Every structure is written in C-alpha cells, then in structure tokens.
Image (cartoon, rainbow, N blue to C red; front, side, top):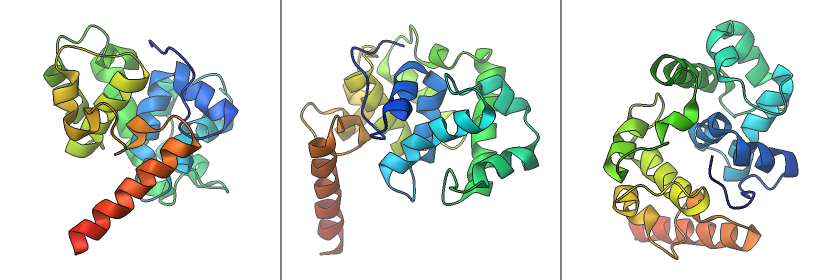
Length: 194
C-alpha cells in the first residue's frame, strides 16, 4: 500500500502502524467508523489483531473462516471493539468473506491499478457494510493519505476529496486536524437543525 508516512487515525502508535501497512485493517477501521468516536473505531483493527494473535496484520482469511459466535465473542471481550460488537462482528466477517471471494484475500487489489475514481467508487460500494458516504470518504482517505489517486478520484470522493477540506477522517493528520473536522461536523449539524 502506497503510504508516504504513517497515518494518524487512532492516535495509538501500534494501531496507526497497522492501519498504515495493512489494507484490510484500513477497510475494517472504516467499516467500524460509525456510532462511536473515530479514534476508537480505527483502533478496532489493532485490538482485533491482538486478540487473534496476529498483531502484525489483520488476517482476512482467518476472519472469513472464523466461527461466527467465537468471532462475536472476540469483538465483545472487554473493552469491546465496537459499541455494537455482535452486529459489527457479522459485518466484519461479511467484509472479509467478500475480500476472500472477490479478491483472493488481497484487499489492496480493490484499488491497485484501478482505472478511475468511478471504478474505485463502484468497487467500494460493493463491499458489505459500505454505503455511498463511507465509499466516498474512503476514496478521499486513500487519495489524500495513501497515495491512491486514480484518474478522477477527487470527483469520485465528492466534497470529501476537496483539497484543504476538514470534513472527515480523510483530513485527519494530527490532533489539530481532528479538532477542525469535529468543528466542521458540529457546524454542519447546527446548520441542518437551524
């Protein structure tokens, strides 16, 4: 995975190192990024890798083959990987099975040599647990922080792909950037209500 530097998404040395080198950890972190703070969501892959005994990677094939009840137990072990460990366990296993069946377990193949941002968008939308917004944010994250920039990637990412924006995890590079993204989200919510 093309990364110029280590990403800072969960603000944990080991968690961020895993997200920097392991594409399945990245797509799993993005999947977990809902209904909980971003940093905790992106730390989830590291917690899971630790619990599975593979701290250097999040083993996509092992997750796909794991007994569903046992995997849900790993997710729920305190501190739980997500605030909804049971449902997220199923989503992570669905994601892993998709990567195994469609990409032979090679998560990076989703974006490696993809011909365009639109093609990447369609591939990400096909991932279990990914919707329109999550797919666009991941395109922006891949483009801004991982060097994955197929033709038209910014357009495919929508507003999340704008240079200098503070809209999402794609724009988080340090604590100050995280504060700007949170401020943007607060202001957006206030605007919707007003």
